[in-house]
Amino acid sequence: MHEMSVALAMIEQVEQAARADGAHGVTHVRLEIGELAGVVPEALAFCFELACAGTALEGAELITRTVPGTARCAGCRTTWEVGMPPQLLCPHCNDAAGDLVSGRELRICEVGLADAPPAARERTRASINEES
Ligand SMILES: [Zn+2]
Image (cartoon, rainbow, N blue to C red; front, top):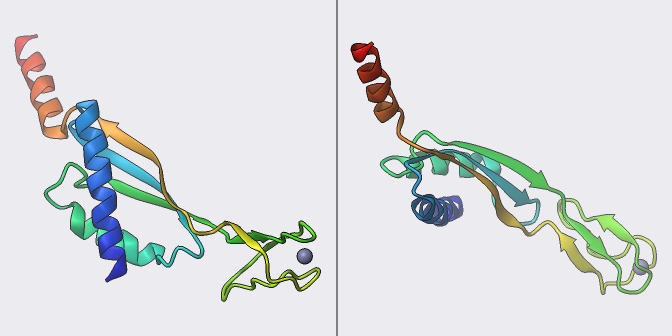
């Protein structure tokens, strides 16, 4: 499944960022998915949850935003939403030389990092309570 390889690549990137930061966990990942990226958000969310088990991302929330596909005509500079299936001819002059401006992205916009795992925080709190 295509979404599983996307999820695995994403988890690897986020884990590297978390390690570089010295974080102990990840609370959430915000992702932009282009309409034409060939990724089904629901399928990706499902694979993400499966693939997160046992990694620094376990329990992290995946927040996705769909980016509509847009194209711009090289001739008349008209910009339009290409939709699905993609309409790549300029609706204004029928020119086929349009450039895709957006819709292919698969971008991690934000990663929420946790300082310490919840269990460690609980232990700290418990020991403070004992002393007081
Ligand atoms: Zn045009």
